[in-house]
Length: 353
Ligand code: F0G
Image (cartoon, rainbow, N blue to C red; front, side, top):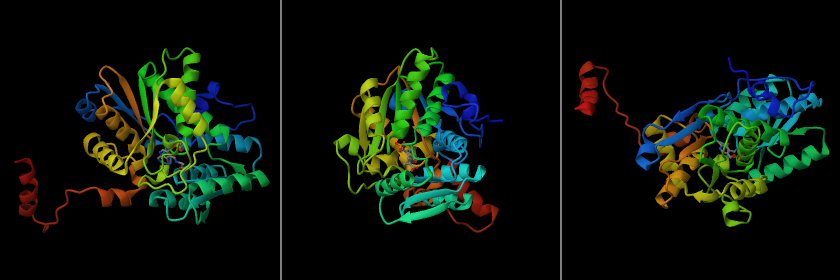
């Protein structure tokens, strides 16, 4: 039985006697060793952390469980977030579990269908705004500063506390921190959280080294790379379509303190990585998640020597969240036939001959 991150990493989290211990089974996600792509890239020690295996299909659950537990501890009556989709799905699920009314502000027409379906099914109050994520976050911040509603975006410090547990799990699984961590960057909370997790585990004597933090934004939404906010961010990876990340400073610190990089990948590179992960590794992740592996491919092509290096790529969310994109962007091997054995044989045997 999954015990959840509150219980599993209790000693590293800001819990008190009064914090309720709750869980939807978040955390303890698989770290899968690459079978094909690593070899093709000349990385013999490559792993993928499957955060899409969390209860609502993304890494957000790790932080949300802490944010919601703390909100309950402080007698909060409702929670709110702005979201490109995954945060809203997660907030809605934990809100439903705890009978806490949940308001989600989302950019109209920009959230993948699976994520919207989740927020609807979990019963959140969905507020669609005619604007992008950055505008939604500004409104959520203003509203929660005026009213007694808890903000559960990653500007809530408890979110990052929960999300850092993914770094702990990687070290627990590998016996030490990897040499490189590749991760997508949107609002820049997650890269900040991972860096904190690796440092805390090292300070606690559980890891001897720290990874280089390799963060990747989408080229049309890459404010940290360009050094200034992007007014109208554009990318197929809707989860990271963010022009003014709240965690900007944390991402810079992770990059500079670890000797890493924050770089960008094009939508074509993201889509190629998305297809390769599914068709060559059996990992169906979101396009935003594929930005991490796309970044690894880019670095390798740019001459980064990865031989003998231990590398972890974070697959942040489940591909099922954006089924429209899968259907529209993959050339599927589909054939329609009459329901006879001869017709099945004609197709199937041709494939193995
Ligand atoms: N990958 C996925 C699947 C995401 O949903 C997000 C962010 C990121 C990566 C980037 O993480 O923001 O911490 O740098 N999604 C947020 C949301 C913005 O509203 O669901 P980050």
